[in-house]
Length: 368
Image (cartoon, rainbow, N blue to C red; front, side):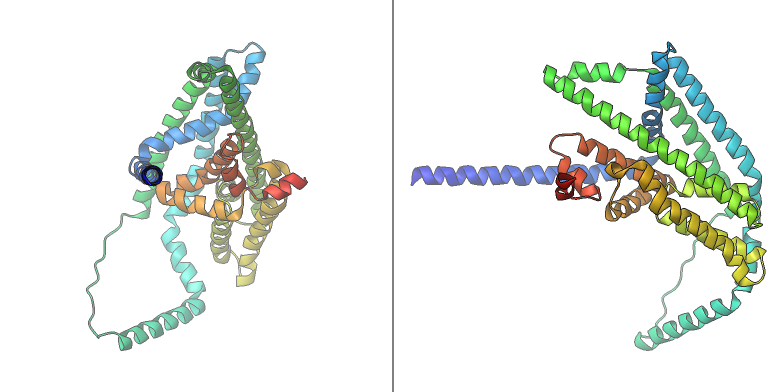
């Protein structure tokens, strides 16, 4: 009996330790989310720099085989990236400024053109409010309105923030790339056994290779998509086709939602530009057709089945990162998810998580 009670006591202690471990893991996850939310201005450029370094590191390593030092190749790549961003910002500043300044007038004209639809929606809203008043106590709660800054002021503040974060990210990415193989050397030195050293280096190499392949491929696909969208909007007679091409390039980093937002924006401007209403919706229909073709046929074929992600995990990642970091979080949500999947696929003990994030089951992988 004493031995059985000792086993029971030991089992209880094991259960208590497991419960404590799970509680600590939950607290760590909550603390991580709080830190990412509260210190997003700190973590945003770091995350962007890491993604950029993962994308360009194989290029730096290839140039080093031809005798080009890592600092010099990193300087060339980062300078080229910064130059491209400056040229793009300069070319888009004019059309974007005009669009922002004309937004109030465009909103008024859009309400005028859609007066019939808006009137029907207003009647439905008034009817629902009337039903609420009949079912309520008749008391009205005072409404508090908070004055928001103007659109131009908000855009100026956002632009300044983007410029500063981009500059910090580029500088940090340069130092990450210029360090060369220093990270791998430190990793090998920190792992005790030789087999663990080989495994750690293999995992990091695989993560770097697959992430670089994914990010470079997606960036090229989005660039071609933006060019096609700009050309299509030019052929349809839409104003500022360069702006629509750049918008399509940026929004395509956000699956599902990006295509919807771009289609709605094109539809709004198309309705204001063309007569009748159906002709104004044709550019939006063409925009949606091109992005749908790219999202469901071209990208899955080129990127490959190994890095495919299931829809639920993508939507959850978009919701979480949009809540944490707003628009930049939405743009980086899928690269973060792909990074998590690549690490899980190449790390022992995390394959289950990688399988959960993917589109295929373990049975499909065994069959294939």
